[in-house]
Length: 170
Image: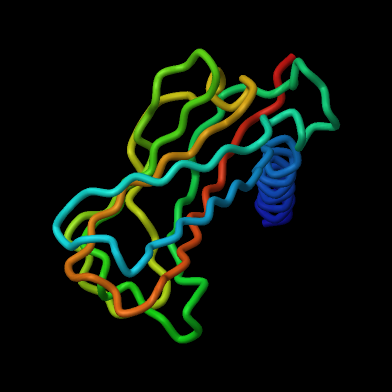
């Protein structure tokens, strides 16, 4: 009986320490883009908005050779910033692409047939593989393509929030 308790305690300690080590070595870094939907945007037509950020080295102390690898999109969300109390009922679909200098654009998140009247919505993640080259290159660009169900009665400001995960490189 004593051996069973010791074994259980040892296994528990190993499991907890492995989870702690993984959370310490895994990095998460955010990126947000703002999208202005003006009242003149027609319904049932795809519209594109592009936002450029500094590269990922900003999150790692300006190191041009960021020591990260296996970068993947881990979370994507769209939210209404303004008008206050606004919702996503006018939005029909949204697609989010990332690229950077010298890399091809990759679709990282999307949502079709949006039917919510909520002010925020998690987007479906696309399996794009690793995004190391995109995020480590200069000038990370996020392009948001959206389509409205109907024209808005006032300008609407949307926020696209992306989270990326990576692990340390040797």
